[in-house]
Amino acid sequence: MSAEAPPLPATPWRSNLSRLTRLPGVFALAAVLVAFLVGLLLVVAMGVPLGKAIPAFLSGAFGSGYAISASLNRSVVFALVGLGFILANRAGLTNVGGEGQIAIGGIVATAVALYGGVDGLPLGLPFILPMLAATLAGGVWGGIAGVLRARVGTNEVISTLLLSFIAVWLLYWCVQSEHLLRQPMTTSATLPESAEIPHSTQLPLLTGSYATPVTIGLPIMIVLAILVAVVLARSGLGFRLRAVGLNPVASARAGIRVASTIVLAMFIAGALGGLAGAMMLQGEQYTLKTGFSSGYGFDGLVVGLLARGSVSGVLSAALLFAFLRSGGIAMEMSAGVPTALVMVIQGLIVIMIAGAAYWLERREASA
Image (cartoon, rainbow, N blue to C red; front, side, top):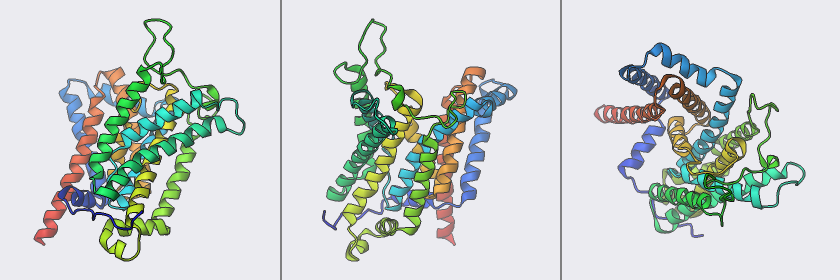
């Protein structure tokens, strides 16, 4: 692949994102606290007593071993998408296609688990092979956006977003067609979803008990997080990513293969998203259905934004959003507070951070 690539334009959205990801941690913390405060005010405005809503939230997030385990499993998905985001962002790229990459990973993991002949294989291969296939599929899906960016200069925000729409509709097609992944219809009440994947293809539980169903996905994610941190901080690839992100033209003149670096960055980001889809299917849902990705890709995007390019920030933000989502579900069931409030709080966090970036820019300009 040619070392030449169209330079990353210094458009307002790209420069604003760069400032946003470099904000001091105090601004991110303040944004979270203000967003939670506004969320509490909205709960009061709905007429729900805080004495009912807050205990429901805490119970759903921390009230039992099962609740904590479910939140930890969700955090794995958010963290994987967030890790992909910060890795691509180091190269000046913005991967907003986590939702589609999760969907593609779920589709491929389902196909391999059900029809790939892996059930009954030794040495953990029944659950490993679907994960690897989903990781590769997600990487290819992300790599498409990388090739478009490197070859013809297509804005990766647009391409990854549109690829997400395509992936979601592919998912819908797969679970609606009996010629693809839909389970055989035995009655008119048969749901449009795949059959349940074999038990051997499901992720093993660390605890061995469904009362606390933390899966092996958690240590896998931690190992990958350490690997991403090492790559970004102490590897030749991390140096190339940073150089391309700072100045692709100068990088090309210095002998760095800019185009291949862009494609590789998007491939890795997509691969992590595809793995997240496999984790969701094999560790939590076990059947592929419409709405499978549950908005997790967009949550992972916000996690990446909050992390400010830091792996530890990704892990912290992933835990925050995982427990927030679990608590929100419990509030809806127990206190009648819509789970949409969680999305409102997430949006407020992004708006607060963007506002802080704008304020810092104005202050620096006037100094």
